[in-house]
Image 1 (cartoon, rainbow, N blue to C red):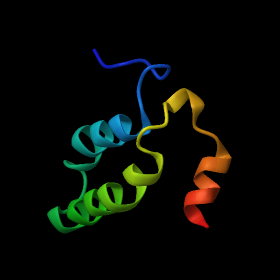
Image 2: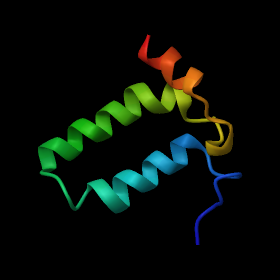
Image 3: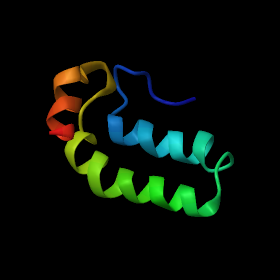
Length: 64
């Protein structure tokens, strides 16, 4: 199956989440908005961080 949290990055997890959870549960327009936000905001800031290493401080820095 997929990578463990220890090996998986935030970017990889977001990609999987969009494809497996979000795509079939929202309208195409909403999906496009989510996909755009992930691509342009979340992945550039958090994408390379391993899920196991993600902290509240990483998220707070992004939000600031």
